[in-house]
Length: 89
Image (cartoon, rainbow, N blue to C red; front, side, top):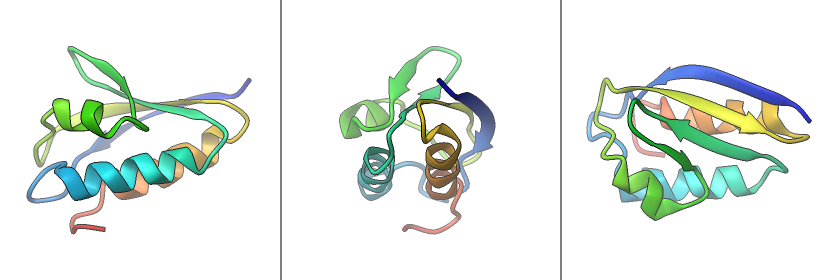
């Protein structure tokens, strides 16, 4: 089983809102891997829109992304590209 992790900073000026959370979940579900966002206080699975929104991630917030599974490297890169975009997807 492949496991990878990486630090990421939220770049969107509005933080992670509903549209971004929906896109994150959609991207994560396209891969054969479980992708998680880890903060100082919580660890959630990205495929849950409500869990992503519950983190209340604002611009500039640093988080750790973790992925585990056969497609972990690709899944992590795809989720990171959405999470770290400066504009809405």
